[in-house]
Image 1 (cartoon, one colour):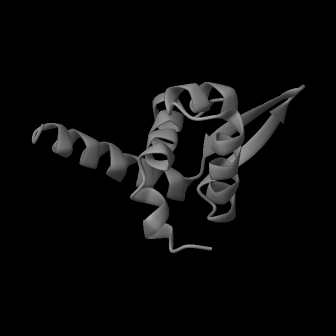
Image 2: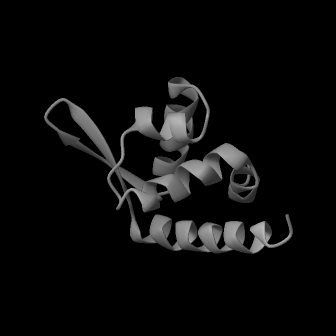
Length: 91
């Protein structure tokens, strides 16, 4: 697998991780794919990589699969959100 830094220097993975945080930690892959403007299958692939890195957990609620940030994922999402805010100042 690519270095974890390479993953987060891409817009869609960073948008998905911050999107989970903004959703109070409970989101679905379909919602995240729309927010990141990518296909559902691409979002799921990214989320599986996040799970491998212990950034998210999948929790089944009936037929639904919720996505929650781990503590490590929450820290990273906070940092990315701060980076996005800082970058907006340069636009």
